[in-house]
Length: 148
Image (cartoon, rainbow, N blue to C red; front, side, top):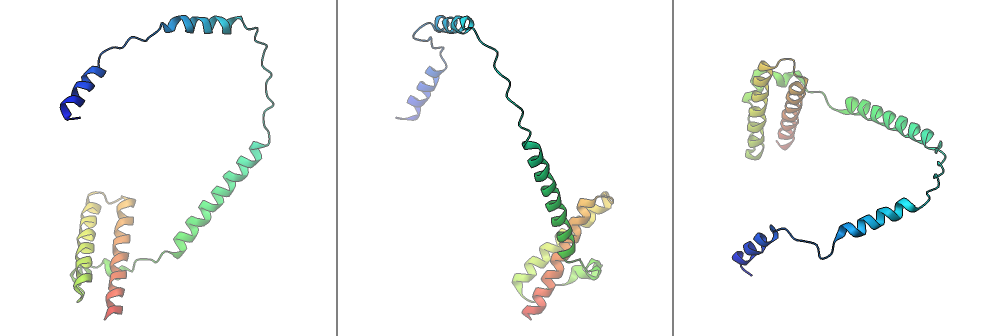
């Protein structure tokens, strides 16, 4: 089958198609049948009272887990050293060419973030990104020192 045959079949799908039999008669019959049934009022189910304590317990457990995780994350993450926030840190280049490429990228990212912070000095997200970039630069320096 080629593309022209597919296009012809697609054009045929746009045409309205009449059903083989009249659907309204069967719909009306079903509605009449449903209307004739003497529907007894359905009994109300008892409300499940056992769900609320479980939901409350799960919510409290999730809140405690979130709080503990946040506290642990803040305590365990290493702080960026202020020495790398100096302008002289941008000129550092490791001897290893693989690390030098990463240093160039991190320097460029840090400079762009500093420019963005000049435009929006109260942006907490930009400040976090800058701290994270400086932390990555510190880790790169430590890696270069260990590599010798």
